[in-house]
Amino acid sequence: MDGYQAYESTKAKLAGCSVYARRKFIEAEKAIPKGKAWKATLAISQISKLHTVERLGSQEDTAEYVLKVRQEHAPETVVNQKVWLEKLVQQVPPTSLLDKAT
Image 1 (cartoon, one colour):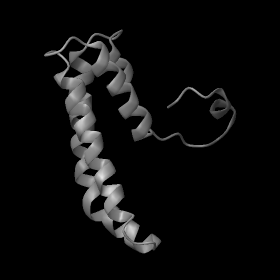
Image 2: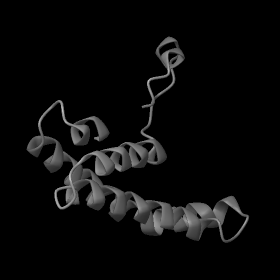
Image 3: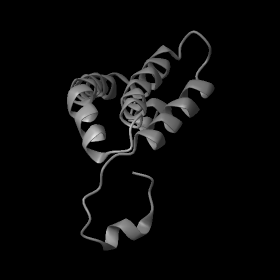
């Protein structure tokens, strides 16, 4: 979530944004000393896999095609990311940049 206050006044269901998450991991990767940023680098790579699925879906202009590609490729990617992030959040200090990115 990007912290936009107006969301709190709605009944909308919030969903994570992979672009926002990726940006937070990039910030962490830049701030962490070289050789120790591998967790941030791995997170960025995993998010890029989901973006690849989106690019595949955008090869045609039909919503049906986009849905088909997402259904075929995204679930495994999302589940793998979720499992890895759940482990990561237990391994990093709560005030770290990696924790903020998760």
